[in-house]
Image (cartoon, rainbow, N blue to C red; front, side, top):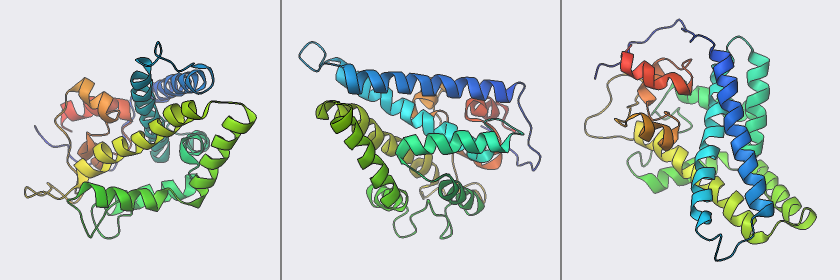
Length: 249
């Protein structure tokens, strides 16, 4: 498959802002609806037990989607031409995701794009660039700090002690999707694209794309696995990456 050529001039999609906001709203409303219903209203028992893995899997995927929406906001591709709106939406989503600070996460992500797969890349593990768990441990510790711990602890406390949510529901439908989504994002959005292999990389972006079809790409990481295309043209929104890859430009 031909590799995309790099361009310095962003090319916007028709109705990109409208589509981006519409899809972002779908992801957020779906996530919030399931979150509230599962955490506060689902009675766990033998009749509802078969639903538990499905709910966790769906919420994990939707949580990944939330971060991808925030990621587009970092690049200004969520609503092109509206930097304050991008920042507001991105900051809100990163807050509910894990209490992340918008400026810190965005700055780190821009540093990642400036020097991907190098010692200057905050997302890269220089010491063990081929091993998943050491890299993930470094990655997780770098971003999930005191602010995130305080935020999550506060949410859990309010849910259980103030709003009366069952502890098991909070663990299964808030804690599990959050942790699993971090694994999913890291594996498909960082480790697979940027890990060192014998074949090396095709250019200075030190990134490769997966060979997944449309549905596998969507369900794995909202097309973020088409990572070389993202690095060469970071203004392309997540939902347009498949067409960008097909064009090979």
